[in-house]
Image 1 (cartoon, helix red, strand yellow):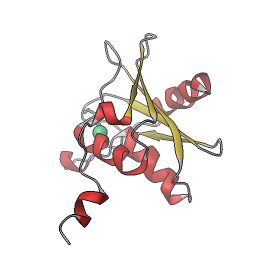
Image 2 (tube, rainbow, N blue to C red; image 1 turned 60 degrees about the vertical axis):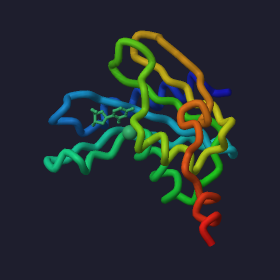
Image 3 (tube, rainbow, N blue to C red; image 1 turned 180 degrees about the vertical axis):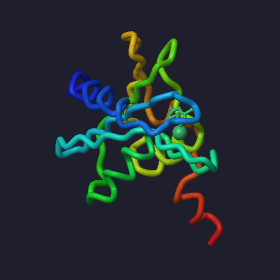
Image 4 (tube, protein in one colour; image 1 turned 120 degrees about the vertical axis):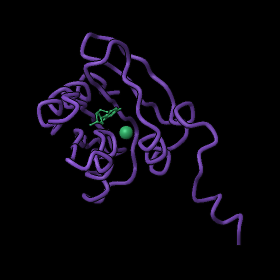
Length: 134
Ligand SMILES: O=c1ccn([C@H]2C[C@H](O)[C@@H](CO)O2)c(=O)[nH]1
Ligand SMILES: [Zn+2]
């Protein structure tokens, strides 16, 4: 897998982050099954709750460009250890990525931890749960 390439893209994304409130920059890089890479950064708002995380920016960017098949996601930030995606991102990742897809959690100091989508959000609410009600 192109982990080095994903790390380069995610690291470049740190410079695009719009984070005037937290000053905490996050970058993500999403690899499609056909080999394209979509980057994402966090984008904050004066109405704090409207903030969009780097992971969701990358996924939405890919979907808006016609890609919904993914093989890996890498996330990086200025954390002490591997960065931990928030609950909202875990839910959105679960919507678009297979439970077994690798997610590589990193920081800028060289930490790297690989987990699966299922490990990030065990028992995720999904489209199948909606059908149960009908
Ligand atoms: O995995 C993460 C964790 C946090 N953030 C952003 C949201 C906010 O802009 C800032 C501080 O929470 O970092 C992300 O983009 N991804
Ligand atoms: Zn998030």
